[in-house]
Length: 280
Ligand code: NDP
Image (cartoon, rainbow, N blue to C red; front, side, top):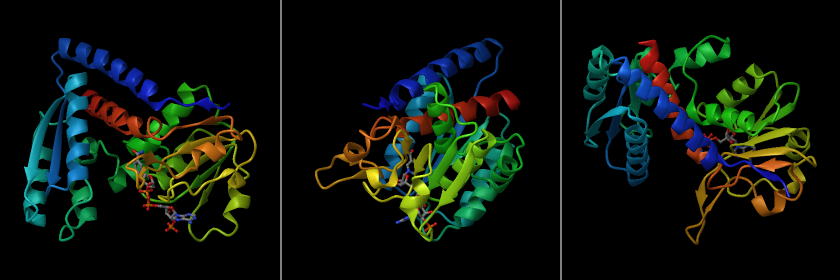
């Protein structure tokens, strides 16, 4: 049976480490504060925002909550972000996505001070990652690197294939694996013969957004499989982009869904908040 990469356990360990660090910072009178902005009341977004605030409370980070109505204008949202950029006591600003259709997400992300961009979505943060400079890294891919490292999986010199090229998962994931000296291939919907490409992988990261698409036909025996996908099936059960039962006998290590990549995203957000607080 493969090694099960336990995201719950690893994210808990990270949160415990951060809790201790935040406690020590408080002794030096350094308090960390995250501002969380939600526009509208999409139920999934409300759950994510609630979980982020809970994690802040657990670690000892203050959170300021801004719940704005659906009809909030672009200018009103930008003004709030500019005000929060100026507030010394706010270290991180998080705008929960997706935003209502009448709001230009890119402009909103660009308005956040890169020093407070704890989601790592600002073009300056992405650019810094690309050229190997210091900056915030998108939380899900950063969490995957922690999963690999803390499970004792070597990245340097490995063939890494990332399926998916979104700005929040696929692209930063590829850049991070490259930073860790992996040999990286990025596959997407226009890739010819995806099975042949993904079979090269020693480490396969799947972020396609299609339930159970990846079966053992896509895998080299002994590969490490990281499943980023989250879907709810007709029985309300969670599953990933990987067909876990089919793939597990063939791979050497795998992340389950739930309990793999998912819990890492919030842990890395908390990590970014602590880094923001220390840097400011
Ligand atoms: P997107 O829909 O933005 O991107 C999907 C990517 O997969 C695209 O690059 C697309 O290619 C590619 N793709 C789609 N179909 C195929 C195919 N048949 N063959 C090859 N490539 C394909 O998704 P995200 O990156 O935002 O998310 C991916 C998954 O991860 C989702 O299930 C999402 O719910 C989950 N997720 C989980 C998180 C967590 O915390 N665990 C956080 C974020 C996302 P192209 O660019 O050519 O269209």
